[in-house]
Amino acid sequence: MTKIDEKLEPILDEVLRRNAGETEFHQAVREVLESLGRVVAKHPDYAENALIERICEPERQIIFRVPWIDDEGRVRINRGFRVQFNSALGPYKGGIRFHPSVNLGIIKFLGFEQIFKNALTGLPIGGGKGGSDFNPRGRSDREIMRFCQSYMLELHRHIGEHTDVPAGDIGVGGREIGYMFGQYKRLTNRYEAGVLTGKGLSYGGSRARKEATGYGATYFVQRMLEKRRLGFEGKRVVVSGSGNVAIYTMEKVLAFGGTVVACSDSGGYVTDEAGIDLDLVKEIKEVRRERISEYARLKGSGAHYLEKGSVWDVPCEVAMPSATQNELSGKDARVLVENGVIAVGEGANMPCTPEAVSVFREAKVLFAPGKAANAGGVATSALEMQQNASRDSWTFEQTEGRLAEIMGNIHDTCAETAEEYGAPDDYVLGANIAGFVRVAEAMRALGVI
Ligand code: GLU
Image (cartoon, rainbow, N blue to C red; front, side):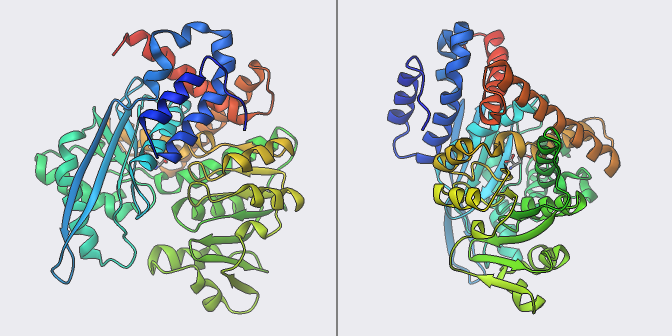
């Protein structure tokens, strides 16, 4: 673990004390504070007026009961969250996650990451995150609708196009956003398109939003490789996960000439000697909503499903962890390095453990942290807000063009910032510092609030 500057140590101690047991949140804060030593050494004024302490404390945290009735007529209870972390740059912005592992610490880590990620996009969006410990797996469409409606029945009073703009995340896609938007519209009697992003194209969504996180992460890694006169062409790529981020990462990797050799879900992973057949993955995950094990069964020869070991055991030159937090351990990182990985791009939020990140750093593997590499999703959400505000709708090409440009800028900002602070090629440091400086500038200008 990198050492924290002694001026910043008491800040971390206070975060640990005040947020006991929230391990993922501690991890996310520690990583940012590790990078900020160089900033406060150069600009001590950023440490004035408890600015860093304020960034670590959410502006508002909302926790609520979500009752709903299942198909058997039983009343179920889940817990809903929305953490409105920082609104210095714009309305709170960030997704909603439905997953049984969700708790306050997870939502706070995601909200905290979101502040810097959103700042890096250069667009006017603050940071927030929400979710519930609701498990959508195996739930009928009607149960999903009732749950979304109940969740929104409380959430609607806390959000708005100028206040807080939620979107999707794990377990929340177009279907869930549709049900939530419908309920918001009914409760408020307002067609306020800009209150949610990730909407369907039939009611105010943006083209390329669905593809944006995966495409964006791939653009980022492509740029990182390009700067070293490398590219995806002919490279073996492992993409973990098989949800929205993973699927559109695979699509762009294929478009850039790479071969996807494996993908996964929480049950296991699949390999295919012919390269992963993306149409089949889409059919299984987007249409049938089934497990990835179905892939091997449907594909037959050449395809294998494995439950033992890890998707990171599959040799590759580029790894794109796109499933969930802490899915890639120090041990996995060492296996990847031994197998000759040259670049890692985080499509998910914080998928590599701190130990894994230091293994990559020591081995001089190009490493793109999630808050920079996966910012394409939220950036395109901000483009969706722009289209909604101007009552306009852009073409796919136009929207993807903006996305590619934004990802290029984020890459260059991180690289230049790392260089400026004396750590060339350290994208973690570059992303944390560049994101922080943007938020810090705005917070200073707004006074102690
Ligand atoms: N959940 C996504 C993320 O982690 C997207 C958030 C959004 O579009 O607001 O960035």
